[in-house]
Image 1 (cartoon, chains in turn purple, yellow):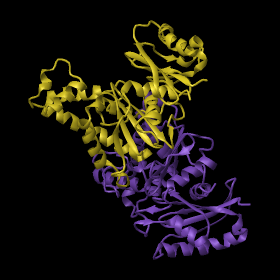
Image 2 (spheres, one colour; image 1 turned 90 degrees about the horizontal axis):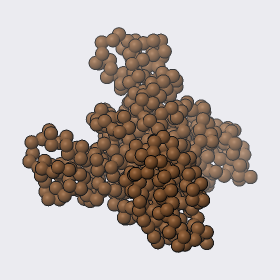
Image 3 (cartoon, one colour; image 1 turned 60 degrees about the vertical axis):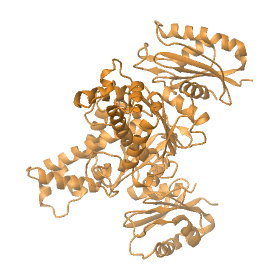
Length: 311
Length: 311
């Protein structure tokens, strides 16, 4: 019947997977560690063991294929290319390895693209033909949809809004350049901002007492009214909103969807981002672009989006 | 037979039109002044008179329709919306007026989009599925193509790269905002840069003697080795190249095509733009993006692109 697909979301720490039907229901799911496998072949062997009970429970003949979202995954080549947060370096021909070891047609794309497809088919962007999705996690990933299609670009590497220049001569980024948006508007970015702000401000703040500063603890502090934490969201929203105004001038989306860790701060991040985006936008776009939260649980969007690569 | 279309390019000064076949050959063409018509109805009446001999020569039954490229033209509504460089203010339902007065189905898009379609169907972007076109004229217009389709955005106003923030708190733009790219990387932009640079530099330059500074005269001076003129191209290329690196991070195009007045400076503008773009780009894009001149004569690209709206 070929009515099922496996969706796999490979993250730096964990790999989540699910058996998904054409309606976007996750029938069964599981998780394994991404780390601790000496080679990608060891990882795929462990993944195969984890997937076997799922596949056997429905019969391999009912599986149409496998879709994978992974850091730096490339839809055209099926490779993972120089992923900074994975143990396997260089170019990893993941789709080919999966096909060889599991005997199922496999598609690979990057994790933000997979989440974007999930949101388009089953989430907050259902029915939209033009939108942007941002994943505000450890870094900042993005997927752009225009004319109802994901923009992959000529080489499969489109949608790197995390690496536009947000601050001229700003913070050093993992990519080797300076001032990239993801060094400010991400879970790690807001922590860097907190460290800088605490150095340069004398405002009393509970953040100063925290041994392990995270986006979640900054969110908690802001909700409790901590002035410095509130300033951090204002600062982050200003930088993100200004960059979004420029992205809007390129693709004129109906909505921008925020997803991932930092987006869970809710109004704390949405309100200043939208306000600064509106203030920075060209007049023809003002008041037209919705800033929305994802309507899918974090792990689900990537699994659902990855599975949708199969159809 | 319906094998012919009328392509019309409405500019701030002149309106060019041509009778185009499906192969992209302009069989006949003409021009009339855009200015000097009290209302848009007077303009369309004058246009109708100018078009009549063309239409009669082939018979209206052989015309499939009319395509128009115009400043702030909108493909979805057929309107021209608040065009700064035209005499008719507000929202002009141009497609409807043309259909009523000429009896031919009419499509309207903005001038940069029309040029982009022309380049894709008949010019330097033939066969490309992902590219960007910039018109470096009085202002800076742009068209983005992804997955073989022009990105119109949800409202038809996508592709305003001229209004991304190139210089924080930079020059005041006609749109009311500051530091927009078109205030630097356009024929008018380089003239503003020249005026600023002459104020702040004591370098001798033939530009100081010119009563009417234009992009063409700056180009001439640079070709003659004028130091200040050469610095102007370096300065302009640095700003344009940096912004293009950010645009590449969004749509990852195979090529960027430069078109219009300032692009006629050739290597003077292409070389520094490409160099700064390469220096600013994320590593995965380096060495992959071609910077190309248009392969169509200026007026032709817009006429051809406008006519292609009909098919």
